[in-house]
Length: 293
Image (cartoon, rainbow, N blue to C red; front, side):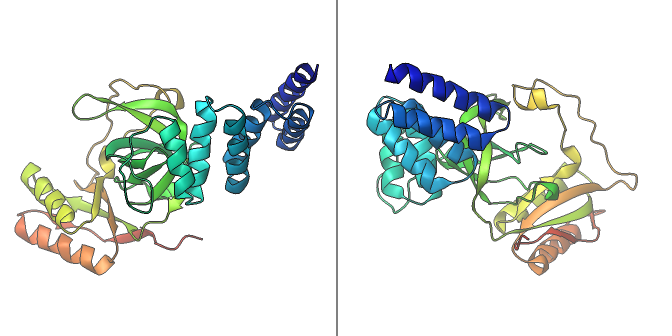
């Protein structure tokens, strides 16, 4: 009888969450857990809701209880790993990821897995810009693109990502790469975002620009070639899309840069334009600084 009542209360909690009444939902989950304290599901649901609300200590505690009651619940282990990573509780994060079968690099203070390319959807409930990066562990990815300033994210931000795959992208080798949704910024990058219109005469000049930026550890992105796709495609596996990008009316292209210093970036751009005939650098504009409001 206890389990039947707990299941009913848990169902009411999920329905309340679905219709936008999270406080009522959490109350129902707590009621269900009190009725049948040995049942893991309401504890998992409490941890899940706490994750979406960014209440990391509660999420960690609830998921710890869920895996204690049901050690085979991989979803609860995964959410425990996310919460522990958010809190920098590395021993607990390592325990969770190992329970999920994740290969980890031994040693070091924080948790790391062998480097792998990944994608993350910034601001998933808003503009939903998908960027590429390097996954540090199952819950963190370093952004290696230069995101548009509207995202309020920057080159080399470390993003805490959710565990569920929400779409695919294809890399240059034809491999499908999973897209994960952002939960929050785990660590703010020391890089600011700059924008400039560049006149690039040929592919050699473009390659030289990228080589110079890489050598100085700047981020560089041709924003003129970015494509915008529908939400359904973004969360699926978008096939070929017609690229509408074209040079601006004055023949220039719009680039985004990630750099720590505007002066250093400007010096590199001037070096580049001097070395490439017909290359030109327009006004360099700071569009997103290190300090966020």
